[in-house]
Length: 182
Image 1 (spheres, one colour):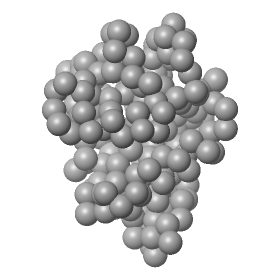
Image 2: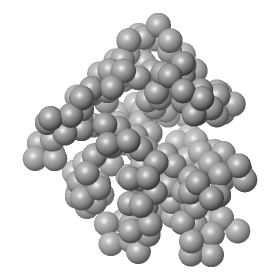
Image 3: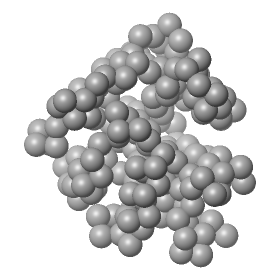
Image 4: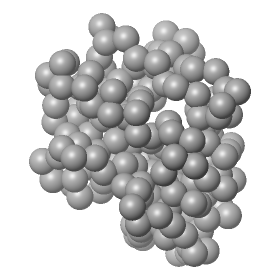
């Protein structure tokens, strides 16, 4: 049976999460995992992570930021060997339930760029997220020498494009700081 747990800086799951994280996201769409560990250990940074675990084995994880008035899902992945079994839906629904009435925002690759990008957008849409096609959004680089990535924002429990754009600016300003700025 799948259980959900908060991931802490000393969690025994971090090695498995790192493998899933680096295997699931291209370098332009993720930070160095050592910095993820630093963020998890900082009480003054609103960064958190939850994991789906079955009999001690990692099934997936979701990292997020708790901002004033909304939550931002930064990374969400399920072990490739476990996909298609409802684990992603279950983990996302668990997170949505924990958020109560708080709006949730996330970034997705442009759905027209690949089959996998389209599948991810469709997955979130099945969970009632709205994609903001007319809202221009560029993910800043995680690293100083990195490249920005054109993305789309999606939201749940928020259907005001102006407010979603404002949330996007908070994300750009707060999430993509260098680790020294936190």
